[in-house]
Amino acid sequence: MMKLRGTGKVFSIGVIVVIAIIAGLAVGYGLGYAHLQPQVNDLKASLAKTEESLAVTQANLDKTQMLLLATKTNLTKSEAELKEALQKLQSTMGELSTTQANLKSTKEELSTTQANLKFTSDQVKSLNGTLTQVKRIVSKLDNDRLLLIELRKDLPETRAEAKDYWSNVKRLAVKSDPALGPSVDKIIVQIDAYFDWIEAMPGGDATSEEILIWLIDEYFYVYAAYRYSDAIEAFQKEALLVVVTHIDIAVELIS
Image (cartoon, rainbow, N blue to C red):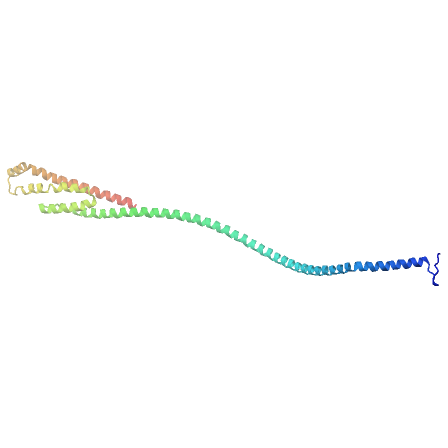
């Protein structure tokens, strides 16, 4: 080993090296500390900020978890409400389907009722028409009755009575059937000729010759008398036919 001599102290090279190393380390540490300390401080500050941000994040996370839990609770509640609403909707749809079926049935019933109403209305119209005809024929039958009452009377024996009688008969006849009017006129136009012939008839004490002369000379009036009688007979037949026709119509209407 190499030794150095000096002021009474002897140092070996190994010691020097050790000292140099220690000194170098110290200097290096100092230099490193001086160089790294700001970075360490920055790291500490950054770490503190990170820890603070982490705390805020954790708080937000806790709050988010609470919101998530509340959301899940609300979602569960909403699902239950949705399920209930769906059940109500299905029930409502079932009721609607039933209502539609009932409405269809009601419409069919209404259609049937309308058809029945129309049928009833048609029947009423028909009955009203029949009633009108019945009233008309009843009125004619009443006129027929009055006419028959007049025809059952004895024929008038004087000119004035005959004119009044047949005028009244004509008034009743045309109410029963206007076609009877001309038939009565055929009677009325023969009244004067008939009563002229009657008034020219010889008295009860007349001779056969006088009666024969009356029959021969008054031939025109005799013919007129026959025409008067024939017109009355023809009118009576026509009037009876009208009355029978009215009776048949009345029977047919009420049967």
